[in-house]
Amino acid sequence: MNNGFIKLSRNINEWEFYSKPDYLLLWIELLRRASYKKTTYRGEVLQPGEFTTSLSALSNATGLNTNSIHHKLKVMTKRTQIKQHTNRQRTKITILNWEKYQCVNTESTQSQHKLNTESTQTKPIKKKEERNKKKEVITPTDFFPSQEINEWVGHVSPGILEKWSRFDPNDLQKLAEKAREYQLVTGKKYKNIAQYVNNWFNRSDEYQFMEAEWRFSQKYD
Image 1 (cartoon, helix red, strand yellow):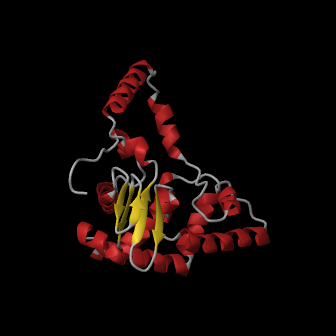
Image 2: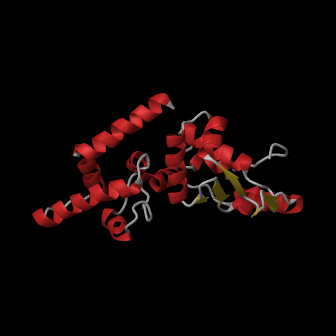
Image 3: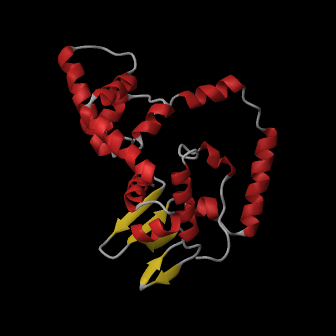
């Protein structure tokens, strides 16, 4: 898929990993590889936004090691940006909402551009305080595999969520469950559960080990 072009939304800077060069590089590589129309590859039908690849192929293209790519793909899958289907030979990746962002229909694109322009011109300008308030907290409705844990943790600041996103949610959930069990046993109450959980993570040997592994992988990526 070396011919043609891909589109990048102007608000990609609002993506939580926009400031992470490795994530951005991998995301662009996924967009670049995705099929722009229905096609067949090695006997498998691929829809727009789909392609088959391997960790080694993505590693050769981006310069990232395979472990780092594997982790980042898991994070993107958790964030419902992509879907993966892996077998022994290769991995099939689907870019979710592909047609919404990569539609090549000129008339449709022009109409959408006109609509966006009119919307921008008529939309009242928000106060700076309102915009900042919107970015202060988000709800990790699907960060942990358990919805019960998600509801218990509640609101999480972007800075904390960015740190957690480095690791497997299943591993962090085990630590979060220990933190919750401790709270139930002691009867202690916390105004900010997410901050309490984050402090619990930072004090645990398991989290410190994961943090050390992550720093090591960043050093040699």
